[in-house]
Length: 309
Image 1 (cartoon, rainbow, N blue to C red):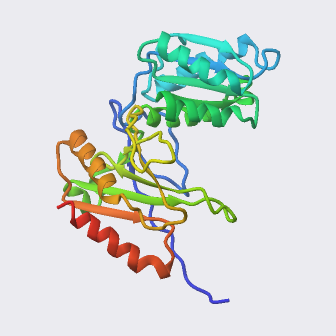
Image 2 (spheres, rainbow, N blue to C red):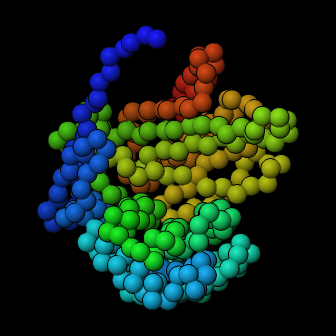
């Protein structure tokens, strides 16, 4: 085996929001959130709880205690969850997910978030994400029943980190004094990837996706989530909170993103709408390309970006 010397890069210093604009220096990927508020916290005013655990396991008193503790931690973090949930019901099974979510969407105008309590590993999770993310555009946060019955500040803080981002907030940014010079001018980062069907499947199409940063930090991403029939190659856009998605189906196991030019244009337009700036630099990360494919894929990406100028 060849021995090589490695080094650990210095952790970037983070800046939070609130009145004191607290900073944090991660140590081996860990830092303390106590006394810090999100850089941009979202007020949660219309939210619901759906409990798919059995009532004898997660009792009503457990739900009340969980709600109170979550509100306390979220308020400390600068993401206040205001008032009681507009809806708090027990449910059973995958079949109840879509009807319940449609009821919430139709009944409670401007619903921002549904907290879903799960009894463990269950198909309900995948259905919640399918309906919330791709059908109705409602942000969801799943919680294991054991973490509702016995709450801890660390678990609740982690939930708030996830919820704030899903609702369009910004948890932290790089301290402006240590930000790389590349951020002195508007810059947009793209990530591109293709998911292929499993080995042995010769029929299903490949799925291409592009994600892009949507602010100057960059800490917010815009994903154009799209529902589509597999027979089509372009689709209507379904926006979801501050996230959306540019996704296309394409030929089986094709590694080139066929519609890259149009997908990138959509995200560039959205970047301009969010920031009122046109990016002076574009940085592209392309995943899943072998060394043998790199040159061809790189040339095509460069050509398609040039076509946008």
